[in-house]
Length: 98
Image 1 (cartoon, rainbow, N blue to C red):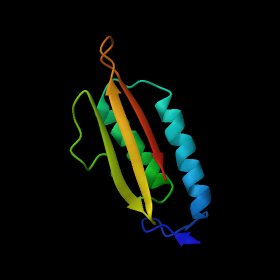
Image 2: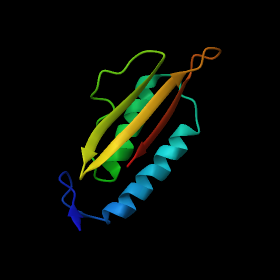
Image 3: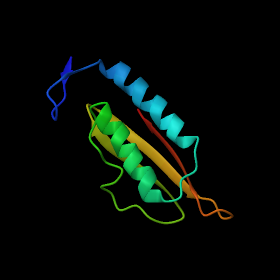
């Protein structure tokens, strides 16, 4: 069992945490967001909640669309892409950990 470096509590198995983090990232992707920074912060909150390192907000991310692939710990990687919708200006963010 893994111990959280921040709160020193026991975490569920890695497989369980990856499943849970991906479920929440999927739900985040079902909504469009007004700003890219809100989406990146939400991704980081989800990662930290399940014992992974926050990464989305640390990178230089901008532009109408883009892609990011960064390590979040324990041999797992965050894959994330975003797209700014031309009509509304809102962002669609798709992310998962593998």
